Image 1: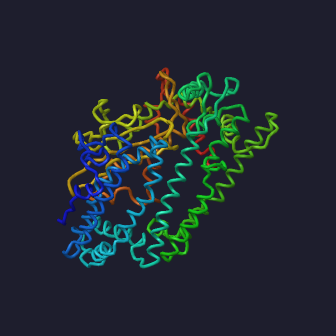
Image 2: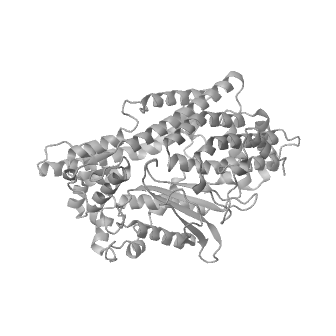
Image 3: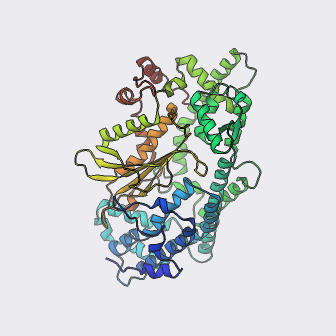
Length: 563
């Protein structure tokens, strides 16, 4: 094995007892332990971060100062096994940042971001540690190890070399200073966007609801009431609220206002404006990779990815870009023609695109998106995803009894994932479906624990996060075909995590420009006949989607592809 650091002493050096800090205490409870999301206390976060860094640095020092010759086990695997407490803390940190952000959290985040960057630089620029990693990397015995072990050695070595481990003197110091400043800028950028998403809400009167379907009107009324504006209708600054409004609203001025509010996030010329931050980020990125000897940021970023070079990435892009541009021009021309035929004296602008695109879709394919939504109820779509996961991966999803597994918000639900044949436990799946103040926009998948076996088997805790508009009590959640596709897409990422069989945690995930493959693959099962006939049923009657409507959806499958 390898020398173990005294983690309790390391935490005590910053006056923290790890067992008494919810963010550092080992996961407890069923299923191999689960995060105590219901016990998160912001007052413990900063001390937890400080102690977690101290503990991890103590582990790193023990590895770097090991008097034994460097081996795969006492260096590479020792690094794999280090930072457990801090890694678990970052599962909580991700929730506080992405799902439940608050001004109080953001103040801690802004303060700690440069310190976390310093901490990471301290590890990557530890000369003794890198010498040991390099020794294993260059050892001829490494070539005789299992392929996954060779891959792990390469990733660890490349991670150090790619992040300034070979630098000396002034270059090393400047690189560390840039990393620290970039951490501040990235954090401020994200928090500025989140501020504008939270703060800018468009309130409508009853007279401004023209064209909106009842489900959206009820959801907007509920959102306004939740914000103390009973009697009004709130279009929140998220895609899940904006997109249907832009699709159906007949009030062009309000469409423009809602569109600008969303696309002007971080660009309002106020204290939360990101333009100066962007300029500084670009300048520092360029300087940073220049210190490492790269011509530009893209060359550095792509070196360890499938594309390898900016030239290859641009070759791929330009293979589709001209055709996409040409298609968009055709689509806008179709919209303009329809608007002109209706007597609308306007030139198609971005806030008109979804509204007139919907009209063109109906004219070309006799397809009404609102009619399709009647068959896209969120709960049934979830059942469809579970069915696909069962057919493809032999997974079974069973709801976990409320109170068994802690959650961070009442809308979050949890399912146990098991093997359909053997009943063997595979992991847990968390779902956080609805938008709320403090939650970042979009949809994403993440894991609170990844699969590994090298130091005891650890089961996956996967999650999906969406921003669907929460309905009024008793109302269904009906979503668009595009949103249903995204729902399947993000579930594909979760299934990727749940399907993992790797021994080492670093090997989870894959390279960034490949990771969308599995999610895009899962999208393909939404429009299959079996999924449509079984799960795309009318939310009121339970009747399956009529075949003529199915035919229209398939006929229009490539509609709007330029956009």
